[in-house]
Image: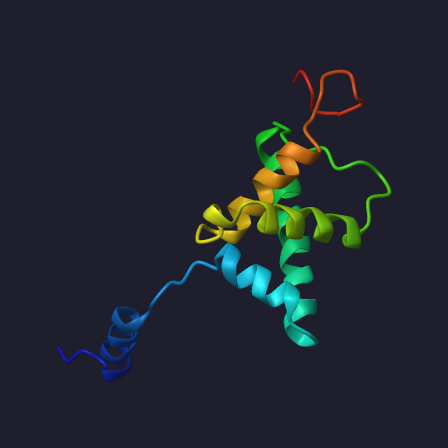
Length: 119
């Protein structure tokens, strides 16, 4: 039986794939840039918030409780402040840095109206 050449070509592409983690250094550089890069960095932070929300719903465990009314500008400021405050950690995964900044800034507390608290 002959192996289709498209299958063999796809295996070659798999071997050439390189996964690169977006670091805190890159995120801060994008925040400091103008235009599309800056907008992209803000969207990245919004994506981290979406990921946190999805994870908390799926696991029924809350670690971050961002209050109602917090704006994209505020979550962006929290991310930027953390990146500037902790240069020793900026080589790490940007999503993890942002997540931990949110845990520190908006931790969930018992009795704060968190619907999954205590489940």
